Image (cartoon, rainbow, N blue to C red; front, side, top):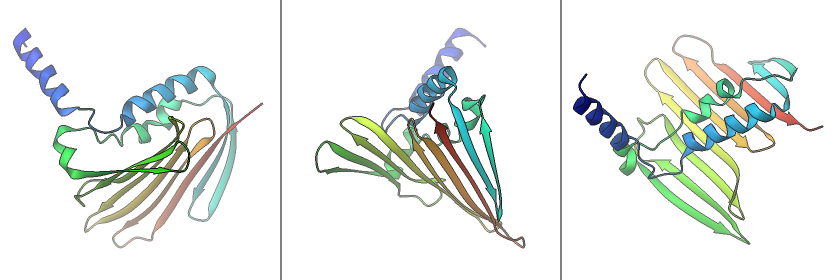
Length: 173
C-alpha cells in the first residue's frame, strides 16, 4: 500500500468516527485503564435462567469485562441523524443526556448518561435485536466506583427463552 492510500484510509476512518455524541468508547477506555491499575476486589453474581452463582474475584480483566459497554459507541458519522438527543436538567447541578435511536434497525436503542456537578454518575444502555430468528433485549448499567449490571433476555425461534444476568460490585476495603 502506498502512502497516499494509507492517508486516504486514515482520513476515511476519522470521518466515520466522529465525536458528535458522548464518547462512550473513550470513557470506557479510561475506566478500563483506571480499574486495571487499581484491581479492586469484585463480587460477581451470575444468573442463567433460574441458576445463580456468586464469585469473589481479586484479579479481573476489565478490558474483557467492559468491552461490551465500549462496543455501544454510537459516534459514527452515518448515525448522526439516527439518534435524537435530549438533555434534562433537574434540581441543583444534575443533568441527564438521553440518546434515542430513530431507526429500529440499530442495535443500540437508548443511552442515558447522568451527571451530578459535572461528574458522570451512571450510564444506562438498551440494546435490542429483533429478527425473524432472534429477539434479544439487553439492559446495561454502569456506575463508576460501584459496579455494573448486564441483563439479557434472548428468544431464539423454536427454543425456550434465556435470561442471563451479571451483577458486579466493587468491594471496598
